Length: 228
Image (tube, rainbow, N blue to C red; front, top):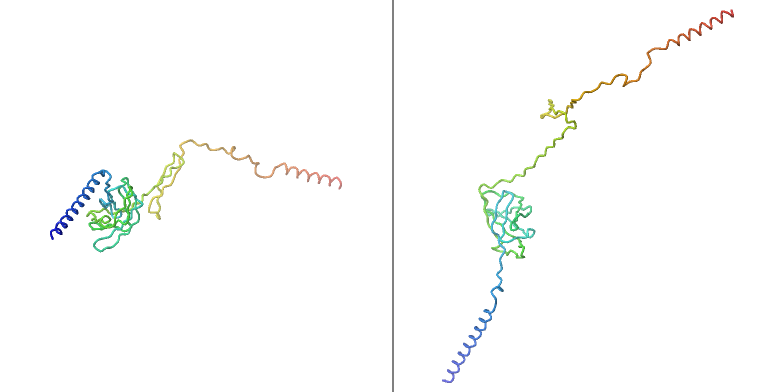
């Protein structure tokens, strides 16, 4: 009985010694690992979401992002309806991606954005779950987006620098139509008839023709009388 107890105590002491030796070896191993060798991953997250107007939303990440890798989904929280997205564009800040919407978002309304995919310039991929979800509320005075089409008015200058543009109005026109009236400040010469036309013979037959005909008739009558 006594020998058995001594055997059990010896076994426990040997086990304790073995565990202590293993712990000491592990501690020495960890102490030799340099601190800089332990890398801590910096997760890719969404910092803020800014509502620019009813058709544009900026997504700001905590790291420089590859714009082509970003895909998001926007849902209206009160009815879970999706907001259709047209395209994505970058900005001067390489951590910001602008989302151009097809459907307009409403002012003072809560939305939820789900980051479907996003990759940082360092190759960090955003994780599913909490990292890829972000709620935002549009401001009360959210600006209404309006696409203004610039009107380009072409003014064609007259070829004559001395021309005057006047407005001609008519009963069938609602707006005045500009017409060009050319004026010439220089003196103009009136061409003389001799310089513009050739001299023409006087009207009527030539009198010499009548004299020749009369002489011929008189000569014939004179010959007939002699022969008679």
